[in-house]
Amino acid sequence: MRTNLAAKIARQQPLTHEETPAARINPKQELRRSVMACMLWEDQFYESGVSISDRISSLIPLVEPEKVARIAIDAREKMKLRHIPLFIVRQMAQLPTHKALVAPTLERIIKRADELTEFLAIYQLERSGRKKLNKLSKQVQRGLARAFTKFDEYQLAKYNRSTEITLKDVLFLSHAKPKDDEQAQ
Image 1 (cartoon, helix red, strand yellow):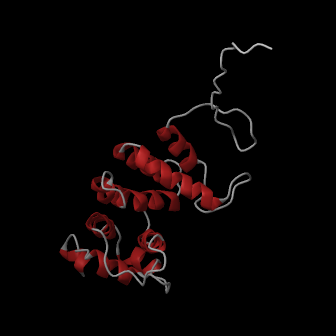
Image 2: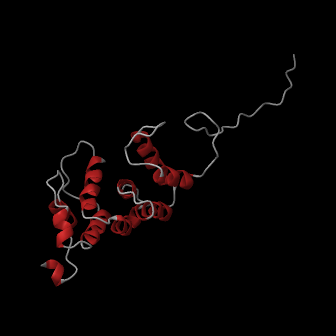
Image 3: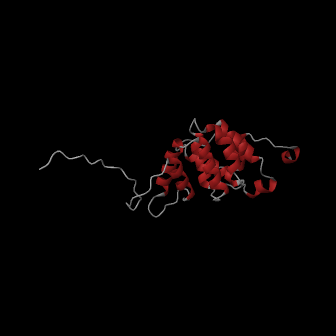
């Protein structure tokens, strides 16, 4: 028996969900791939929707804030995804390093009036078990207030539904101010 053998270093190769070798990618690439290929909280063939959202949440702190914001904007504007960009901004709002980009990103990704209430629903969901919202972080408040002024009377009336969180709640929490006298009317 020989004992003087070179130790084989086991190289940890990433594997797919089917246990086949996968290419190594950095956290930014993994975040982008996960975001662009999912519908938030919907189960995929190999992975549950919850584990996908957990993976996305764990990748956001590993990626530079500007790149995370860019991924959220691309997901909304290029891929036409609605919920995952809102989820990303919610996760950014929890990180001190990413907070500065929350307001401009939120303003840019909200394209429909009902996304104001959808964002607050995601925001409240992340607070798990707490009572109804009564305060928002400053950056979230600014982003929602700026996004609120994008919509006219028709759009706000169209999406003013009787849900748990209403547009009235968004208005009161964000303290949105009209951009001109016409909008104030």
